[in-house]
Amino acid sequence: MSDPLDHVFAALADPTRRAILAMLLEDDMAVTDVASPFEMSLAAISKHLAILAEAGLISQEKRGRVKWCKLEPDALRAASVWMQGFGQFEPVNLDAFERFLEAELGGAGDD
Amino acid sequence: MSDPLDHVFAALADPTRRAILAMLLEDDMAVTDVASPFEMSLAAISKHLAILAEAGLISQEKRGRVKWCKLEPDALRAASVWMQGFGQFEPVNLDAFERFLEAELGGAGDD
DNA sequence: AGCATATTCAACCGGATGGTTGACCATTGC
DNA sequence: GCAATGGTCAACCATCCGGTTGAATATGCT
Image 1 (cartoon, rainbow over the protein chains, first blue to last red):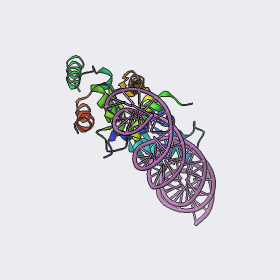
Image 2 (cartoon, rainbow over the protein chains, first blue to last red):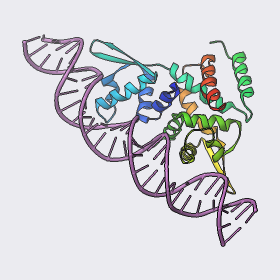
Image 3 (spheres, chains in turn brown, purple, yellow, green):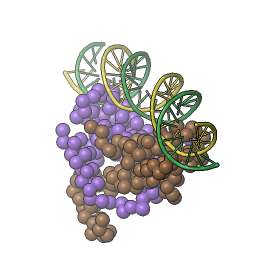
Image 4 (cartoon, chains in turn purple, red, orange, yellow):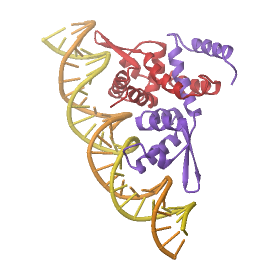
């Protein structure tokens, strides 16, 4: 019932969470360090991180008493593909999508 | 304080709304026709459409007593750009594409 | 052991969301 | 004019969401 895209897009809908992702782009961070620039409680940030982790957008690994947060751009990939489908589309249907895909596979490298 | 991305991602977070977008990919539709495949009230669909319109993902034009809904793929572009900015990843991968087809178009458009 | 640090848990709160229903315009057609 | 059709509005409900606070749980330090 709940498509993974539900969680990804819902996670991305919050500006705090998008800011967190932007921070994690530069480096892995501990929860406390993620929280420090924000004007809200640590618990709130902890919840945001849980939501991001649930969506697969980050992973969390506990080393000692510190939990490290790491960006997982792979989860963004599915959502990105979903959106590009709409962007490239001509008002027909899947044919155009297939042409689009073939062009991508032919022009860009392999995965 | 509300970034347009907030609205776009929030709008995309609901599977009903994504299904509506997928339907509108094929053709412009009247509100009643958008609603017909869904097992929920017309009022509910009307709200969903309002949310999509608020996010700029569709436009609505009233001709006579019929309100036509039209996909506006341009609104997706900003969100897509945001994600590309994140992405050290290639824009397309086949797995995600196939998942997209099954989950979104296969389920919604073929009822 | 005892205390500080890192993080989560639990309860709570106000406000948003997704849905319902019934009443309410607006437009079309007999 | 009046009834059917297309769509929204308003009130309501249950649930989720984003935030708070205070207590609880781990782990590390001395």
